[in-house]
Length: 419
Image (cartoon, rainbow, N blue to C red; front, top):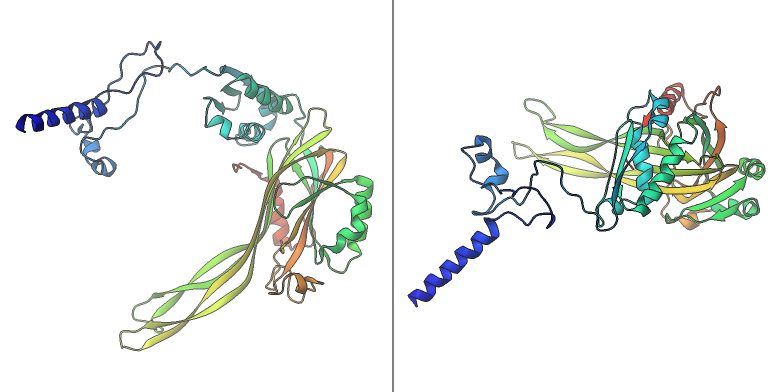
């Protein structure tokens, strides 16, 4: 029995040594890299800071960090025909000297065209860019897609482009009854979103028809100047303050001070358009966020005092209606893209409380939304208008001077946000 127990201990020590004491297998059987040693966790003598690291101190005894560091470039996998290629992007980026990191737009459009999973799963590949060069390691299929995006940036226009963006709301979605013969439906992936293509002649007729409705409201009409492939942001937000909590204050009365919170309500619209080389087709990514505070529910609190009594306070719990759109569309440049977001939270804030204002008549929506609340069919109209050279962008209509300045700053700011 003693011999059996000794043999078991010896076997356990042997398995532990093989599991934690040896380096992982090399990347390739033909690799010429020298053997890589796995350092011991007990390296406090060589690195005093490591002995105090909370991350290392929480590891089980005998554990090892399974990582490898190579002294030279590794041998990259090529089992799926991957190869490395560099693409010159200086013809595009040199024209955007005032834009911070314009190469990020190229990376974004490569990911939109290829999908993100292709770069973070098998087969192995990577994409990277600086201001001069786009570097890609992948198979021929992915390189073909990258070349298509690269051509639109390098051989396409580098002049600023003008897009007309119109944001509207209609109280009742029955506007489609008269408008359906003027437009052609196209596919949209977002739930509740309808997309239509309209000729520019029919677009003028549609706008005239909508403006004749009593529940029509034009929230913003602006000419957006944007560099090809870059992003532009339009937003109209305002803060809605509310009491979220109370904090104690010594030697004062009342002994508690209200803590206020803020919710930004309104809309934020980001567009990222990319023209084809011949300017016949527009690719655009539309990202829109709408938030509306429907009401603030009041909740009474009884906060204890040192005297044994209670202090009565009231906090607000926001009831928020939000809507999100993030989708890519492609359409002929000589037509107009119309997006109907469905009956959603009203997309614009006004100074008098609700996003649409008090007393707005939403015809027929009492049958659709019996619980009430300001709702409308939000419409986005996007039109390509050609080169912006010598043309001046306009600020949204119906805005105060402060809002005009804010809108103009948004027009002049190119967003670097990742999609």
